[in-house]
Every structure is written in structure tokens, then in C-alpha cells.
Length: 259
Image (cartoon, rainbow, N blue to C red; front, side, top):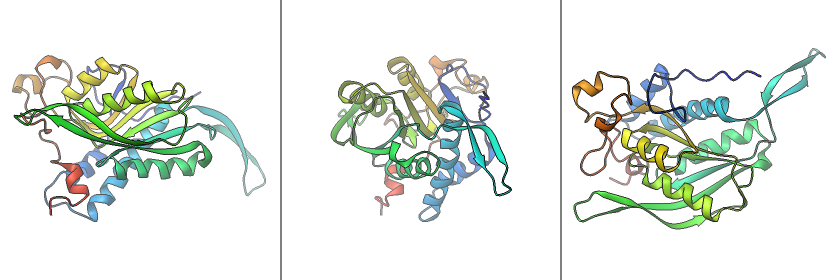
């Protein structure tokens, strides 16, 4: 069976990291990050970006079967397609992940059996020290709709900054979920080298799909090399763990919380 993937950039972060090489989507993402971009254009861009990101994930990770359909011409068309029986959970990590998770949930329900598609909800927040640096993440509430046995778990969270939130939510499912998930996949618009280091080390079974790896605070000689070639010297987080160049506090922007 075919296993063609969306083109990816050359990097040294390992086989579970997929940074997509898509100039159209990078252009939309650049607009999303601009200060002048506000609602409702913001949500349109988010919808378009997650359409593409989910499609890349489906092509790379979802099972396929050979299926037959009868066309309007009365002829049979037979080819490899998505297995409609695939079971998926889209996990909303509030608050930046609310809209992306709903986008994925609705799209998956159009191509898979909707009975096998679910959305869970996790309330999380960063924990910080006295200087404002992120020390981790804590889960304050969950709304989980059933078992995870044999299901693909998607985490559509736009900004992969420190990796602490994602690490905690994956560990929560591993400890408290009913059964063993078939796969864990993070869907991020932007990630940092710090994020990738944490999740590839501490959650090695996780696959990451993203459009950009932001490492804007790295030395010039590091930026001249392929991403991950000098990983130890790459830096994408400022002293308050915000991504540079990044998109600002996207959770606040999406929810108009700064107005």
C-alpha cells in the first residue's frame, strides 16, 4: 500500500518529528502571527491551517484499506482509502486548543465513521516560579468520554513551547485512560527545539506534526545549519518561555482575552 507523506523539511530531530514543507501554509501561518491579524480572520486562518495539518497526519499515521464504491456510471471504483472504522480522540487542551480540537473533531467525522470519533477536554495551566519561568503544567479538570483502547489520540495545540503541558496530558492518559491507545500525535502550528527535546526524550512514542520550528534565539552559526544539527545550542524560548519569533500569546488572542 502507498505511504506517501506530505513533503517535510530536512532536520535532525528524529523520525517521530514531522516539520511540513508547505509554502502555502507557512504563508497563512505568517499572517496568523502578525499583530494586525484579529477575529474573524484569525479563526479562518486557524481552520485552514488545521485542515492541512490534520490531512498530513492522516496520510502519515492513519490505517488504510482497499475499498470499492459504485459510481454514477454504474462502474466499480476500487482503491486504497482510509479505514472508516478507525477510532480517534481529539483532545481539547483548553484554552488555545479548544478551536483546533473542534476543527479536527468535525473534519474526522466527515471521513470516518462518526461513531468512532470523540472529543475529550482537559483543563490545564502553566506553573511558574517567582521569576515567571515555567516550571511545569498542572491538570485541574478533565472530561473524558470513554476508553482509549485502540484509538489514535490527537493533541491539536497550536504552540509547542516547553512541552510540559503535552507531557503531562499524555502521561495522564497513560495512567488513567481505559486501555492502551494505538498512537499519540501532537498537532502544532509552531514548535521550539526545547519542546522537541522534551517530548522526544520523555514521551518517545509521540509523533509531532508542525509547520514551523522556531529557534530565533539561537546563535547565527546554529541558524545556518539544518534544524537539529546543533540541537544543544538551539533556543526558541525567551526567559519567560514565550516562543521567538512565535505568535505571541495565541490563547489570549484567539479568545480576545487581551481586550
